[in-house]
Length: 129
Image (cartoon, rainbow, N blue to C red; front, top):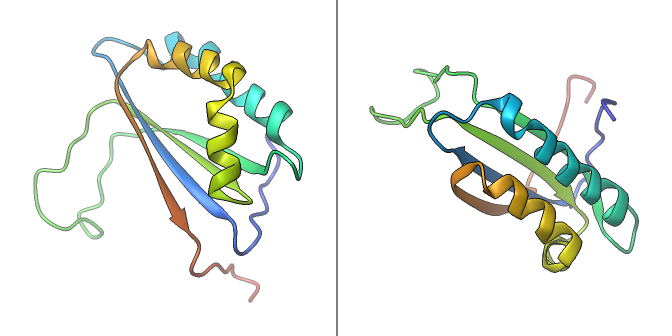
């Protein structure tokens, strides 16, 4: 469950932001989030489902002055859910499934806003190239 993630070239990445309601802590949302991620991994983690892997990040409170463009960046408490899929169509099919929707709705109860954006990979590399 906490192994290194190998991301194949050509996959798609979905970036989901979950802005937490005021006063909601990570402890409060952790169980619902874990159940949702487990459903994705177990139900869609094969060639038919298309799920490759994912990561969940909690906003750490720091903003790069070197990498940011313009002042006034938002720092609301939020989570970033990054998932990798063989195709966008497989992602959409999985998220239309009733089992996933039930688990995502449970996470959404802790959120003031959620949105998910998809990206196509252009480049990847590591220190061994």
